[in-house]
Image (cartoon, rainbow, N blue to C red; front, side, top):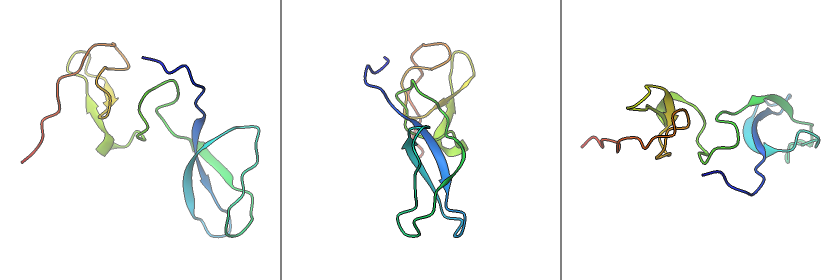
Length: 95
C-alpha cells in the first residue's frame, strides 16, 4: 500500500570538519547545516530503499531477508515483498 502523503528521500550526510555522519529526510533543493559547527553538510548518498516504500530501515544486511517466493531481498519490517508483491512468510525468531 502506497502512502498518499509525500515522503522525502533519506540522505546520508557528513560534516566535513568532524566526519560525523547522519541520516536525514531531506529536500534536495535545501541546504542543511550541522547544528554544532554551523558547517554545510555534504551529501554522501541516498539511503535505500527509496520511496515509495513503507520501510524506514536502511538496506543493511541485518535489516534484510529473502522473499520466499521470488528470492529477492526485502526489508524485514515489510509483510509484502516489494519485488513480487506477495505476502512473505513470517520471520523465524531465534530462541
